[in-house]
Length: 66
Image (cartoon, rainbow, N blue to C red; front, side):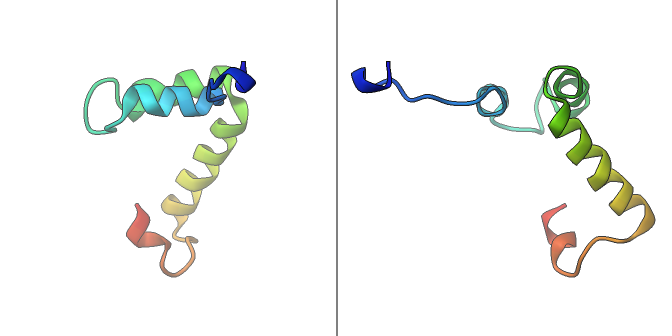
């Protein structure tokens, strides 16, 4: 398929492309539990990031990304 010109993408890429804008529905509240179930690696990343935000251990400069 790739030789025929199809661009191969990951599950995470497809979900993010369908969402496009995290401010509209479905938003992070709907998609993160789904990703946690079907793409657990991203669930670990989201939990780690949330814990860092909660306890204030984000690295300097990262606060601008939130």
